[in-house]
Image (cartoon, rainbow, N blue to C red; front, side):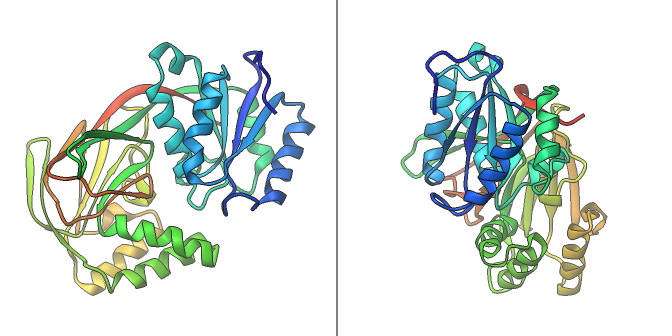
Length: 314
């Protein structure tokens, strides 16, 4: 239930069930029990589907909540930061965003060591209200209607094979549950997809103009592809992966799963403030793990420093 007069200490909690409306009642009861045991003052709303998340976030912002906690995954967090970036600067700077991981993919929460299975520890950390200003990446592009658009991201933009793979990973995780198993199954399915794309990309003083398997532009760990990236240094990490042989490809997946992706000889890492994609017209694009319509023509990915207040652990 929502109150008309919201004091600054009251949390606005958005619960995003993994399976949509009506799913995950047991998980919400677990979160609710922890909040009530710790006497957290909060109001909560529940999303009916992915399309309702942005509407509910706007409602929480417009109703004056200063602490907004997302019980969800990377996609819900992405929606939240994009709504916050639409707000006036003084409104955005007065709001603090937190997360209790509960998504199909929770990599940004995992970056901060928030674990899906440990709600009590997460709430204890959130209650300590340790706030850090964090960076956002932003992709600016033109859509099929010729409109100039942009989308902010917390974790990464993927271009090419991994964008397709992340989309499959979401679908297979619904079936298999296991993060690692869904990744492996997605990889096997991707063997039947296109494995490389011609790209023309400018990064710092370098220009990559050749066939590329995948590019990850990370504001954070980028699902393991930009493991050294952090969302508070004003820079983006970029991994450009050329098409390896099959044995190298399998080795690359193993290094990705074990956190040593940059050790693979087909991976070419960069650090920059901006990436200019002059041509990648056949390559799919994913933003924080969610597929987006492929941009028409060139597009640009950049970073905006210290624009969101985020609750972090001790």
